[in-house]
Length: 322
Image 1 (spheres, one colour):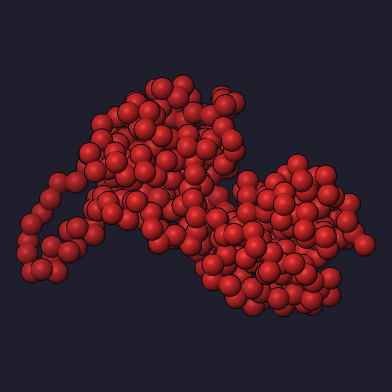
Image 2 (cartoon, helix red, strand yellow):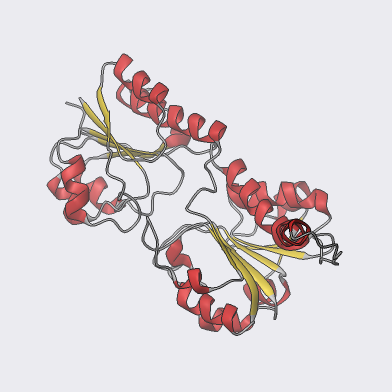
């Protein structure tokens, strides 16, 4: 069976593991694959695939119907919002994901954002390299309120890392988790309170119809003046134009964004905002974690066709095995 790898940073070791298992595996060299890539461009890459080891590119109903050979999409990540679930269920295409491999690395990235704004080592370093001695008082992280919008695996891992910094950690989600609150040092609040009290607001929700532009102009107006918005979820979870306006008007003191509506992204309105820290969808991309995710995606392919896949990695059991 043909395996086409579309995800970025796929290791040669992982590719060889697929080949050793008997798959005809190849990596795409198209640099434009990612969230928002056109269906026609993606089709030309995956049209002969029985299996796709996928990144964040979109698999629409129309595209999936064209991929008549496709048996399995193995997501190299935990989110599967870019794959039309009703269509793969209808067509009998399998879907897996690498649950448990990205959460810690993404949480680490969020803490890097928080500490960047809390201490501004970059600014102090810049002044020192200008041969100037100008000590500054920065706000610090201790005692600041961190709001977690969404409290799944990533939200919990962020809380574990923020608690030792003596931050006040609040969370909001559709289904409160009172049994987890003492474990992770968090407190449940309603959405209004989360927006009003958070010094740092981290978005940790999947992209669905209900979370599209979840943070818009109206929600930003409810946030604390001078708050810092962090988005490591999906680009469309926030209205980036509304965020850019809020940054320029100093309603938000800063923003940190790792995800964008269309990727690769070189034209976000946030790029014109000096108080926005932007990274190219690398929250989960440490050397160690990337390698682990790659091998997990490979194992999901192998075990899926052995019909021996752990259910925690399975999103949908397809029917195309021949």
